[in-house]
Length: 581
Image (cartoon, rainbow, N blue to C red; front, side, top):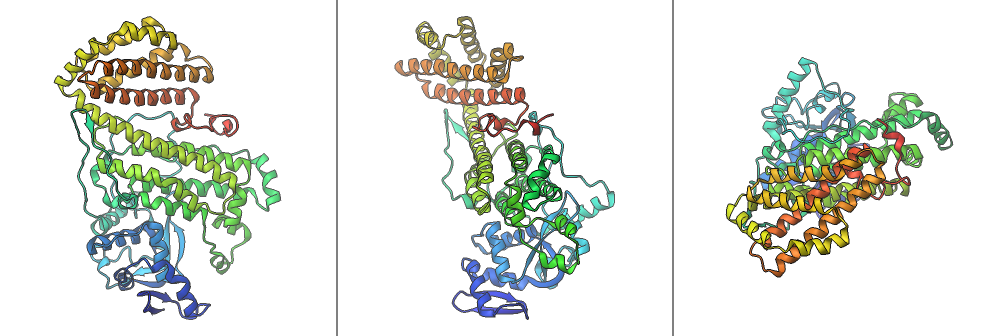
């Protein structure tokens, strides 16, 4: 291996001697990825890493080292996907392999190691730097699990909790994992860089800071406190499609049932890797996970060297051509879409286990919103060249995830602001006085004609609202009251078909919105002093009631909550045989 210096670009490429192609051609092809990297970063890579056959390093470990290097030298880091291109351009011929036990396998860079005299080895006895292939599975199992603290309990959805990932039970392996993870923590865990910032004052709430999305996407900007507020979740179990009917689609494509099984296993494993990134708040690594799955690298030379049979090649992995062909099969499309909706529901529950929680920091909220904003663009980039039909289905699901994360973070932000109002007796007293001045008879006359609601129910709700103000109830008590209202309205329809329950729920939300708008109108005309507080409470109640209705509909239909609000909740896209319990 020879370092090649480019005076114009000030970057280096490690060229293997005897590799095909001229040096000049390789430099021209590779330097495009290193143009944005500083010379200090290139030199840091060369000083600390070296090519080595038969050795490998976890990708997330290298990226953690890189983030630490950038923090120490006040450099702006690139995302994980760009770093992957950078390190390949510096170390020419680097390959990617999935190593580890089944269910715990991780992606590694193969053919690279940390130099023995590198400062990165200090404190770890070189365990992660000099690991041979037979030690790589042990390393991969702990590369990104940095002692996740116990998470707070939260409401669980109706989804099953079966996981496709297995927990290790061998005591010796657990002791070794603990030792390695401690060594990893001592080397690559960055310090926290922000403090909690959500606050509210006099019924107003702070707006989200306008920051670059990439600047707050990485888990290295998060504190342990942020990870503590996350929920639990595992990759859901989705039924395998009908294999008999599946074979008739596969044969004309030159595929077998083994390819289909491998696709399902790989897709499920990819979801597990994404979920681990989410739990660690490494949002910038989700794109790399998608790219790794949808743009696989062909390691055919490795297969040939091992003299594997055709069946062994199938078990090794799928080529991109095979992957895209499988995506044209209806049963595989159904599996992907139903897995996406179930899995994205788990992601939502992990990031926002309680929409009314007061423990979510402003920085975590901002990172989740930036993550939601970038999802669609990242998925489109990763799926370039994939069949249009699978792109459309996956984009529908990922848009639903992004919309749900934005809604739930906004709801949490409203709850934080409303909690500040409800904790101030003077403001509650003023709200009660202004509410008593509202002309309820006029409101009932106008809204009753439009909505045709039960006047007794409306009167009871008004009395309950007034009583709650008098008792100065907390936000959590108001939430319990709203849950009781929803249950009361939907109780007599619990045994009706889903379509009936959905129509009743929609009508209830419309009626609630119309009545509340009439009350806000009356408060506006009277120039009520507490108008701002009422407006904030009204926004919170509208959003929270919609959230509660979604939960009830999801429970009635036995489907993920995020599925309820999508346009695919009809027979055109829905494949019910995969959701049979």
